[in-house]
Length: 122
Length: 108
Figure 1: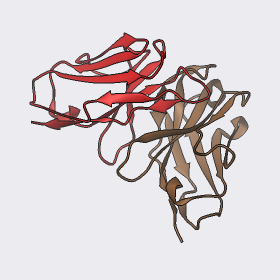
Figure 2: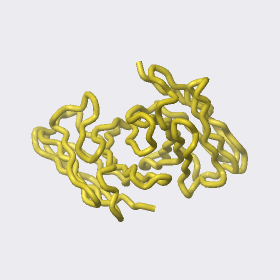
Figure 3: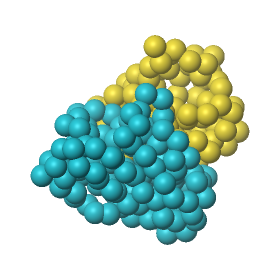
Figure 4: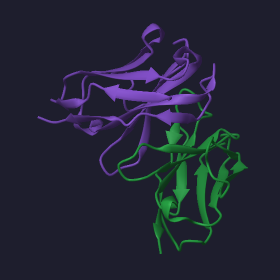
């Protein structure tokens, strides 16, 4: 079964850091681009960041550029999001999502995890 | 940044009727447009990619059309399980992908 499981969320104070992880299984992880998408409580979806299959191409939303860093470890079938200088507006459910086509970043997202909640509050 | 605008924000339709949801891009995204369905407490599910191709396991009552800046998701005969929030997303403008704000499809 193809599966993505996020972890690492929690309550953190403004200005602090947090690292999210996404464990992938059931598919050849290093064939696909991966992404992070977030959803603030009661709001819509916001693409946060994406990374190509070989980490050669990386992108960020303007709202997180310079504060968040995406990375992957293909040997461990894992995706990460290092979040620094967290703000109240970063409070959201963070989803990990898989690109639908092999070896390209220009794809839709066909598999999603259940998300990990990040709350930024003092 | 490409802005995706969905309309209407809320659509009230009776079961068995047709629903038509719209998505407009602020500049051309070619056919690199996806539609997702999200139910309360669940992760989004991919319905349509490439503007008009149904994802695996998606019923034929879901169809997508359009290219460039204007796109439509049509649900031909609404079932009870189709009432949800629908999002469009452009994946043409790397490295900055964007979602629409969503359309809530509710029972009339």
